[in-house]
Length: 593
Image 1 (tube, rainbow, N blue to C red):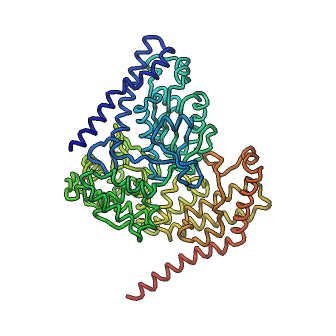
Image 2 (image 1 turned 60 degrees about the vertical axis):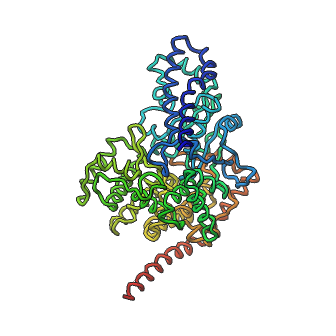
Image 3 (image 1 turned 120 degrees about the vertical axis):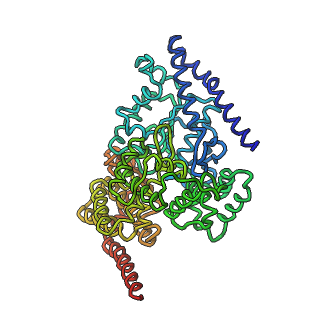
């Protein structure tokens, strides 16, 4: 208890030091402003920083849901590496110092899969600026641009600094932001709606070019083309290694529960569990395993099983892994299966509307729709929201808005809803998804984790209605192309690669097929933006594929496509045969009774 008090006291002490933290960088830019504007700007900046510091330094997590915890209490420092490089220990780069990192690289894109820790790294780098008295940090959650009618520059000017409200002219704003005093942290590029992504990308590029002396960090999931921003160095989040997994576990569990931490680490290190180490090297999935350990001590073989166990555990316990005996009262009076059905329906609707932050009005509107369509479920909206937020802890409130603890939970419930549809409705939905992929293959990139969950949970149906038709379509298109250019080869290799990787998960489900087509040595890059992500401009084609290394890459892609053209029909037959065999085996089992 004394240790907890001391940590909180240290947190509060740091909060009080915010004013003095900015003294030096503020003095540097005050020469630009008159005395009256100095005072106004200083007050506005300190007001913003105090609120934003609290929002980032005090956080709720999947493991700590009852009250916010200091970031330093649970954050296990993560490492990054140059994008698309092999992970060698000597190439791993520490993120423990914002100053050292951003003094070496001015502009960074930080790329990582769902749950890899991107947003937590951003929180740490942002709050670490205060500790190191490095720059004036500004954090922007890019998903809020989806509801903002304007550019990212206008968002920064009007929503963060309130420049125009406090009487700053464009000339003064430009001089302030040109002073090299700021560090901008832009979190969640992949959460931008597709209809504003291309424009926002250009806005970010223009903003950075206009104010190149500041520092910039942008986070995103893979395959969004953010790595093509010309002034940025690209990095990806490293997986946790064996020692870091153990350290992470100990960091999440109170010191008085050290025996529990040791049990979890022992379970992870069992020889029979080593094949699932890739799951547990992801901070989110490792957190899920810690959360569910006392109820489910075995490591799930599938990602979807983690999410299932997490919901079971959240429904059964209150606010920490050490309170398994305490079940909080649920005000709505709903049963577990009803909560799950509501979450599936809400996630399905919001996911396909590309909503990741939910206003109170949006949330209640969708709940009213659910009640009107599902006569078997009746509830009071306020009580249900209270249960989801407090009793179960599967919705977080951030200011006036609500979010899932992690976006991947929304993807899980949305995909789970689809798997439970009847045959006719499932075919209808999969046909819609197939048409969407046909008209815009970048859908696979934007919804990669969602599709991977669907493939894991409903393999035969998604293969029949989406995966195989998509691969057949690409085969027919390739058979109609003679003497393809480097750009066409690049485009179709990318489309085929994603279809096999995401829609069929061939590396796991058909390893021999996967290895017969795809070259592990091949470094594929997405050059385009938006709907043209697979396209290669004449300039990119010249720059990337003109040298010896570039020509080698094109030849490898060409070889892979030729292999597919020659043997693609047989490959598709193998996929179909697996579906037929599965159906036949089920029929034989039914005939046994």
